[in-house]
Length: 563
Image (cartoon, rainbow, N blue to C red; front, side, top):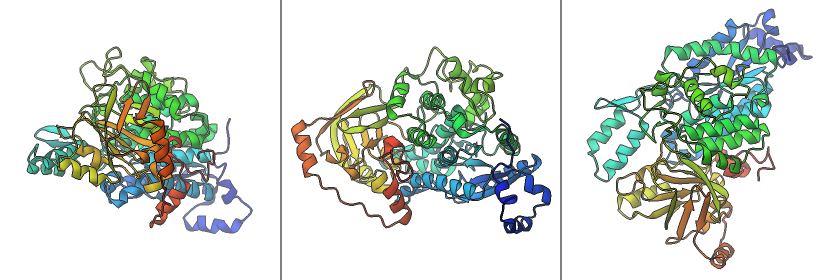
């Protein structure tokens, strides 16, 4: 259905209050510009982060492309927080709240200024999810553009990434390698602009956005410094103009099938658990009934086809050299893992986008052959039980068995785990329980410093980790996160005591705290929940409105059904 390109902005440029047009003239508008579509370009501004340092430059290039397409591109800033720089500190509490702040900021600016479409830049972990939530919430035409991955670093002739930094620092802390070598890796792993290059949260969501249909083909896999990224930014306006002309809205794209495609793709690439949290949030914003139980069934039946780090050693740049994300999606389409009938922001179906894409080359080790996946079921699995009635998301790429039973060792802060590992206090067979860091208690920070500490040789794959907070996609090991409900609201994870037996079975989808019903009820009755009080305003606002992890931590003030 064709519509006026300036369907929304005309309410201001040709509205009843003519005086406001003085501001447009002051911006340099000509009379002809008053009939052009105005495109809000969301920029996560943060020069103090490699992932975001080039974001405004990309936005200005997109605006240039809008001008060439006879539209007006207007960049605006949103909050941005570096997950890597802030994790393990108080600032890590800001990471997930920043996603919701980005969604709110984009909705605020784009709706307030009556822009006709939104282009959101995905430069770091929470940028793309935030802009996608805003698109779904407003249902204005638009799409997401990836800022692109960082190039690999180099150490002793080998490609390295941020994963190698954390693993080598953990190894040096217990004497497994020399500190000088770990520090050399630290200095060379991140050579320039771009998001973390492995299948961590940034790239997991970038690939998922192409799979779900909100990102143009190749955007997620084109590196940040590649000339093709500039070309993409110049040309993205043409796609947005088509969306406007045909009145294609985000909720036309964000169907149940599209969410299934995204979840299956995250599973097949060995992606980050953060991708699950964002999918749930986006589904709530889009009004699509897509629950953790639905994702559980997808994860059980989806094989792993990629050896991205942390599962293997490959980076997003390796995928780019092979042929990009469309090559991977074509492979998954041929495998029957994703549905090609879903509409995308090209105005075509996913299958139509992939029609001219070739087959995966045989002489490579990033993408497995269709009949020889790396694993028959996803590295991520979801369990429910008396410890996690709302669910818990596991990432177990280095765990050989699908079940684990161990003895609880409880902590309330990430550094406590690190200190215990360095002191040799954690033994194989332990289940490390880190709680009181959920969305209400602490903004649900990432605790990579804790999980990285567990990768030392004597513990890697021999212990499990369970928490009501998040971990980065850089993490590996037997890790269960997003335990819901969290301890701060009375969740059972707060009842666990040192020495309790905890068991989980990934394929059965169960997790159990091994105490009697009588003991469980006794502890529950004795539990005193202290009111959460935050001294940071942003965190107090987030804590007061956030839903639990199985709802994606969306605002229950906006979506009251997500209690």
